[in-house]
Length: 498
Image: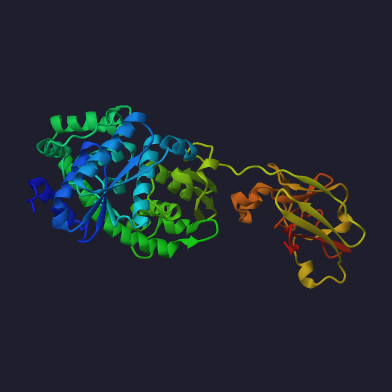
């Protein structure tokens, strides 16, 4: 067995310190053909017997660069054959998938590449997948997060181990890898897109980081990597605390995770007596964790996105804010609902509130001298039944219902329609006219439920609003002879009293 090179020994120490691999593991090595991934393959090939692992070479074809990408795949396949290893390739039309999902091209390439790696593990071809992120990549990532706006979570940068993905080169400089390949006489492929300075990462790599090293501190890469390591250590503590907060505060509903605003804004209330109980630092992290719980994976939230959610929580009124990856947060009175929606349905810019689509309808209602009348409203999938009641023999509980109308006070035309902005009436027992919009808040009707909310008009005046007292002018009272009880139910079910 040949002795590992000094660089291979350093990589082995990283693998052991972070417990990346175990003896007997089948390790997929992600190889694009670039210098970093080729060096990773050669280093793991050196260490395979020492580590007791078997290697499988993985290559993902993004179908973005035509013949150049085909040449990359051929190069990796040939190198794999030279080393006597198994080769497995995947491919996806990244540009097409990006357009369909509304992703930017770089993000789509990363997502689909990692989906390929995860599929390899899921299918049992590999136990771990090693990818070639370096110390330079770590520094670039931390800087990119800072420039885009990040909290402490973003300072943690790239994790050495994330699920089945491991990064053995995370403590190695990119230049060290090139020198290693030069000593081996090992060629590699160059991807011109890595030099495209219209991309933020490329500008950081080509311009910002070299200037920081040259003009500010020669160890800036090591310092940024150290910062990321310390931030990751703190994340372990925060993660455990967030697990407890989510378990205590979040309730899973059919619409998503329901969280009390008070609990989100002051998660430590009752535990801490100082101003720290307001827990803004914890609240910010809790927002991120809740979004991740709904999304089912890591999220691309920036500090601006998190602040939008906190502003929504502090707002005295309802509303909604849309976040990346089809996550929407809605405020309903004293709770926030974190939910996932189809991103293709979101047409407005991210972060802006999307009002519910309007629903309009209007149906004429004919009351008979006896019996009842039914009106189907397919626009809201509900059936309304207007039942005539002999008031003298009506049960006490029926007479106490606030929404019952007096038949003799109603005059045609009677119309059942959706509520409209500006609708107002005087509810039974009140001295003043109230706008329906204000009554929605008083009766805690959620914003999304107000769309198409039914009202009954009598000769153009509001007489009845679902779930609220009848209008004073038309309400049943002690001298009523015939009451009108309106019930509502699903169109395919019997009506239920409202």
